[in-house]
Image (cartoon, rainbow, N blue to C red; front, side, top):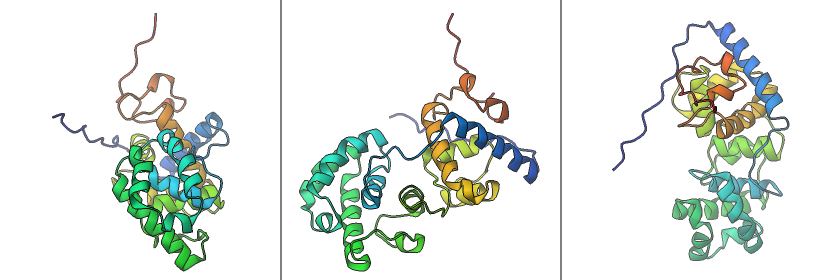
Length: 235
């Protein structure tokens, strides 16, 4: 049995709040140029599809979810359809995304609540969204920011969690405290962008086990740049 991966620790940070805020905003400016127009990579045509895709993306890659959802939405195109889905069939269709029994229960419960409480429409409101089965702040922030253009907070997934600590934005270790720290560092108008660009940077450059510090555009501003192993240059 493999031992669990070592828990990452944020670098020691001696900045005062204003210095940290200034550095964080410089980093954001750099990664926004690197990923212009960054947005969720989950395929969707409307807020409901994005909501279901985001539920499926827990502990799963967007690429895998995007392989599953086209057939899923052809078979069950709306909340009423998924609310009354055949459980065994639904579980089979989403099996490859992992945790399929729990996800099927959340999807059906969420769909039923949308039909019964909101007339079949996904609510564009944080308080209402987090009351839906299987929906937490991360999922609600994704839907509000990406589908409705409503700035409600910062999406904190595994990538944002990791990068926020590596970049010295936070010493928190739970999504709620990390989101709060990020909201204090960045202006409200940037909150959606913060989540979007950090997710892409985490996938493509600052990976969990092999951070590419030697090609990272924000390495000069990152206090963890010497902590991550450097890749050997090709001869």
